[in-house]
Image (cartoon, rainbow, N blue to C red; front, side, top):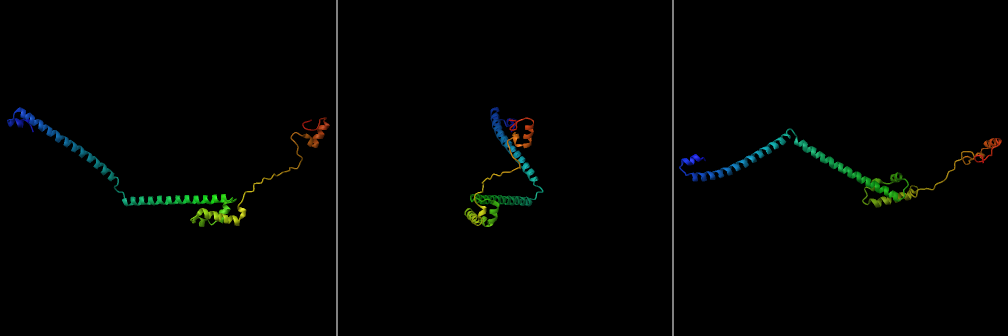
Length: 192
């Protein structure tokens, strides 16, 4: 609304000022709403543009192939996990057998393990007791594989064939003793 329009209607200046003031408040309120809506519109345009850009990145992508790839990776992870669990179980089983052989004072771990039915023991529900019983049976049938290691030390004497004397004792060498006597020297330890 313009001031001239109100003046042409014959309104007084005070009335025109009040009408213009109220009209200004209305315009400012509507301008603020308009600015807010413009900002919201621009934000939505930006978001839409970003989404379109992200969707463009998927153009030409075979989603079924990607889904299959994800399923394959999940299967690989599950298989690897099962393999690792089996390896840990095998190690624990082996350690249990080796520990039982050690406790039974087994002398040759590999030889004793060769005499055990490993697969039957692996499938046992009470492995520890069954392993102990199997090792006991082997220790009764093959006693030479069990018991304290004979650690008695023996002394071996090696003879090199001549008489041995202390270092520097020249009296033991007959030739040297005779030569020293001939030279007028005393035979014995360093000329004593």
